[in-house]
Amino acid sequence: MDAKPNEIAQIDEEQGGASSIRNVIKNIRKMGFAFYYHVALEKAIRRAFRRYITPSLGHFAFYDLTQNPKVILMKLLDKGSVPDVISNLENEFSMLDQEIRQKYEMMNLDYHDILTIGSNSAFLIYSLVRLLKPDKVVETGVANGHSTFLLNAILKNGKGTLYSIDVATNVGILVDEQLKTNWRLHILPRTNEIELNKYLSIIAPVDMFIHDSNHMYYWQMLEYRAFLKHINNYGLILSDDVDSSFAFIDFCNENKLKPLFLYDHRKVFGIAKITARRRSLGAWRPPPRLRDGARPGSRSPHLWRARSPRS
Image (cartoon, rainbow, N blue to C red):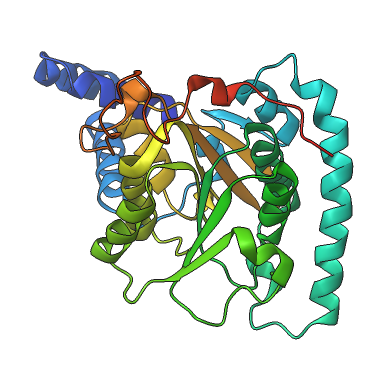
């Protein structure tokens, strides 16, 4: 028989207290040894194989989960300014998305379109780039280059650069020549932490990071932790396919972040907003202050005040 989640949670909580032995005995008497043993065994198995199993949709229900990207925009940004510009952004993105879909039908592509990010997730990223106007956006996982919508957002902003990281050379075919001015493609010679951190240390600090590469627990967690060290104050860590492993949930828990989740048809997209006091001790440190108190290339908390995009 399956253990109920609230009973497992109760056991977890009681075992962490000072009187854990007394609590164990109390639970055995209350539930019976066989049932308590079953609950404890199930908990131990889940903990041991956590890196090799995928979370269900129910795991995300304990957090802030929605199917509407506008809800997330309202929570991340200045609520008063978002409704005024959201309709314009929807029109912008709708036209752009149609153009990209037409390219998929007309061109011979190396990667299946199932690898593309969901439409609601793409609209959320597009809106964040248009409203926040970040200087440096980094994505991992390029494939056909569906993130051309990001480059279009940067082009409309009139500022910013997209740094794309991949391990294959046959990527980004959808990116038009006119968009490559604000695009830097970096091919990792090897998929390891050293090579990733070496490149990040060159382009740091980063304003926004988007994970969409290898969705195994080990690599997802490696990327999240690496970018946390190099991300700017008040930056964003975004991730597609967070339902592929527990990595994003565990990462947010270990750094005391409050994630937002978007259920986008067939998968879940995750968002975590970074604040200065929640960054790790090994995080990227800004250069020394100048005489007037400013820092070269520093970012301000005002980044989080949404600004109306230019047409």
